[in-house]
Length: 466
Ligand code: 6PG
Image (cartoon, rainbow, N blue to C red; front, side):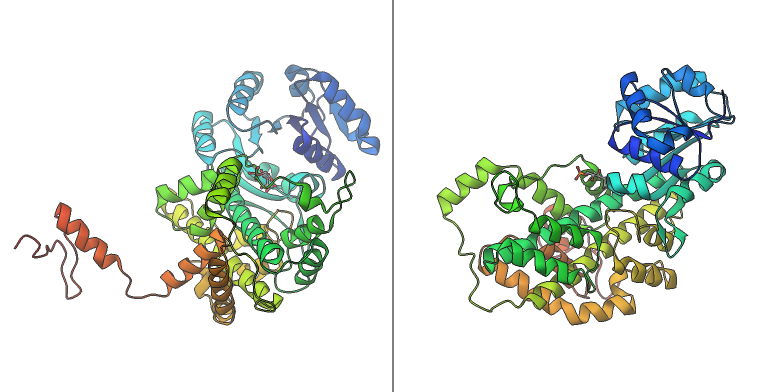
């Protein structure tokens, strides 16, 4: 019977949660998973929602169960699996039927798939919020032809998170625009998480605070300007106890961070775009470095541990909070700057204020500050966020704390890659006369590359040979 409003392929953690969310919002949905037993188990476990869900055993059955023109969401692992699924599905579909890739795709793949689809409806949408977000309201970043997005916008807005009743689901632009915005979201996510981890390191190793005190500190900060999902969960992570040993959970977790690759995609793309996102780059590097456990242990054996402990009362917690506020603003300024650059480069007209708006709820980087960022970007989407009056005022009050934290950490051997590169970015961006004149001199000296003179004209050469 063809009566489902939409179909979904891939009942992994995210796919299953998204399917339940769709059913929960009153839409009939047909589902299919490569393993048939998974499909039926999912249907059995769906409780009251089972009535809205049609489990199907093969792709033909899935297609037959959906109303025309069809829309089918793919929730399969990024990469070849998406291409394989499209290849298997497309021949079964009519020319008005739409495929929606809602996984974490590399936006270059989405661009290619959109081009391959030609006039056949295809969307690439970024979905953020982890399992809970997918189930109860994610942030949705749509990409593809506007007319195709409009066909499913009522479903996307219904299932998305809401901020003051406004849905966190927006069309970002053509082709891979939605997946691009999701990638930058993840880059910011990496930097935000890394900066929090760095501050945790100061509390743990510099101030010798126990995990309970660290947890309380994050919980307190979650009531102030840093209020955000990531600060909230950091407090909970720090406060958790390992049921096996009774030790703090953080003490039994290995200090090597995993990554599926979205942060790396962002950094690679930033280099292609010449978009400066040093805090995000530092966060990706820090994850790579964290996995070199043996090398780090050998380094400690060779050079000895650094004198981490700060002198008593040297660093008030309020200073750490201010440093994190400054770091966070600088990291978001970099992320939005990259989006602006890509928007021009790819001819997308990415809606910066709307991007800040869809990130206000549902996604991993959701935070109080994003509402103010949306306001600042609405006033002027073209300026660097750090120069928007509201954020410039905060930075004027907090960059001293960031400087103090970075300086003390350096003196005590505590690595703060993301916070220190955030500070270097701030200082570079407020230095009218930098030092690249020396680089231009060097380039001209060894390669006769020419330089611009401060008193006018380009293509000048220095008197190096004489
Ligand atoms: C989200 C998250 C999500 C991410 C995973 C793991 O917005 O819901 O960003 O998409 O893929 O949390 O990411 P890493 O393995 O790269 O840390």
